[in-house]
Amino acid sequence: MEVVKGVLERIVYENEENGYVIARFMAREYGPDVITVTGNLMSASPGENMLLKGEWVNHPRYGRQFRIAEYRTVMPATVAGIKKYLGSEKASVL
Image (cartoon, rainbow, N blue to C red; front, top):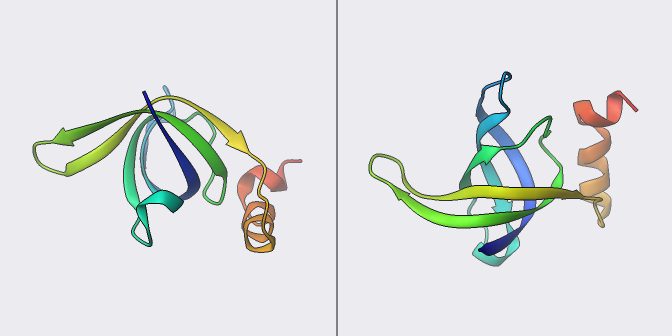
């Protein structure tokens, strides 16, 4: 299993019944481009720092994607990350 660290940029699709999402993720080790991640991310919000474990797959229509097997949220360590987190829905329910 591979590990990818970064920030959840935006959710493209979300199934609220089972938590399945297709999302754009900014992973530091892959440079300035966002990557597509798929899998179950229950109640995840854009701006969250996350550590994802999973594998790279090649979707026949949409190309290279990271399929999430497990994840955990990591508290932001930068001022920009903290601001983004505090502006998210998740922080508003605290």
